[in-house]
Image (cartoon, rainbow, N blue to C red):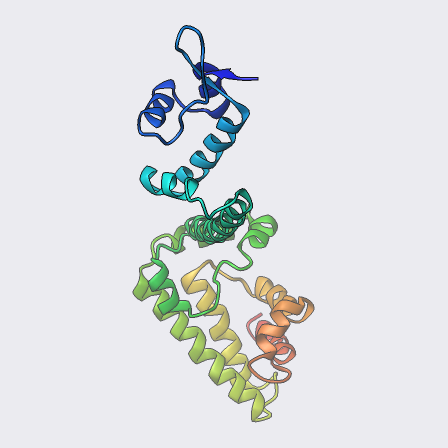
Length: 252
């Protein structure tokens, strides 16, 4: 069975002009001609066209493709092996690109307007959007969430560095307080709990004492938050929860 140039162009998603060009340069010469002199392509020709289009998709120039396909020392299985390797590399590259685009999309949603280099400079290996989707599902319809998004969209790299520096400083001081054995109901612990509430209110959205109590409970009940705070020191999560509760009572 053979096929006309129009049929092959339709099968392969290329133009008739492209097939004519491939014929003219010797890259893909049809095996047959009709009695009227028209090109007719065999199944073997279609196999070769498939190889051409594959390498073309990967960015190979036509002269290199021709050299690859006409190499007498390369059998069809070698072409398949090479194609598999090239596809694997390309898939990995595309997956990384897709992840980068998804990351950028999440950053846009959250309002963090930073380049990848700036994000690493500010956050290091931490991902500020790690729980963004979950946060949107839980609080996306609230005024607090909307305010957080609005404010974050205005922050520069220097703003984010300042925010991160405040978090790091507070974390070190609270961990030291717990390590020193100071009680959660003590003045220093309650003052740091108030500083925690004020930080969120200043940079993201206004946090009432009732809301802060809910945060404190979540820091213990949610294993991810508990792991985050307990990484500062043993028992920090529960200590902070108790300090937040005590601070709310103090300011009632």
